[in-house]
Length: 106
Image (cartoon, rainbow, N blue to C red; front, side, top):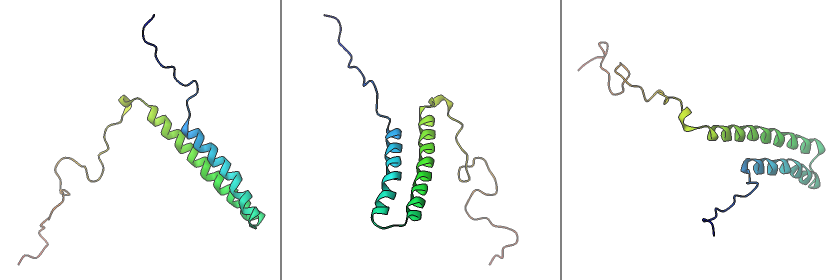
């Protein structure tokens, strides 16, 4: 007998982003049909279909962009962002009270 066997991976792993986009495309067809069955005008159903298609397209782009950034190696991380509240160094805008020469003192 040879060494221990490794379990074979699934030949085609499920791509969750593709599944989400497929369900969204299905909804782009199903929702207007249901609206037509329940008496909505053709123009209203068409507008709904176009709106759902636009949202689906934007979500697909964002999902793909998210997948690409998640697959990027961690060594390519940019320097940490030094935003408004995370400044370093000294300066006049460090928080707290500032006494100025123009404020009246009792």
